[in-house]
Image 1 (tube, helix red, strand yellow):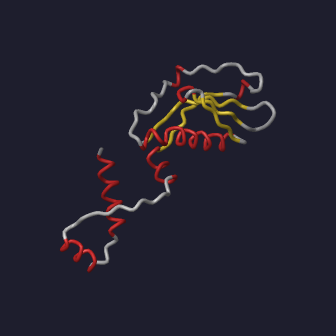
Image 2 (tube, one colour):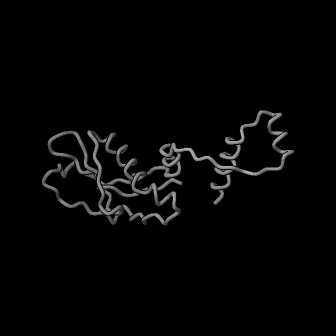
Image 3 (cartoon, helix red, strand yellow):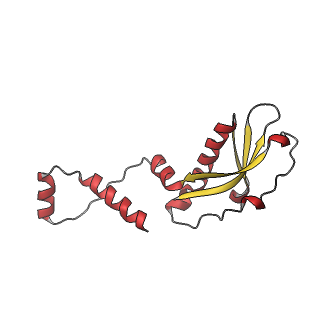
Length: 139
């Protein structure tokens, strides 16, 4: 699930860094030592901000149109190099990469399926994970 949010990239006056502000995410902010790192940190910020909402299938905050975003003057920023941009990321991929906790589940299957699968050396966990991902992607 690819999502985008507009962000204001305030160029720091004193160094190459940027402070990134998200108006749609309660004006939350992050920063990076340069523009590339600021974009990466912005993507991580979106992922960490929306992580629980995504897992709980809660409606995500509405993304404003980039034209609706206004840049307010800031005495600490070089306003000539400050800009607004959309920051996008795949929230499902972010959750997959950041959720490493494994849970154990017991399942019941007919004994003949168990015997056939064992003879073929099938990995039950892998097959179940793939089936769940396929089912969830259809939703």
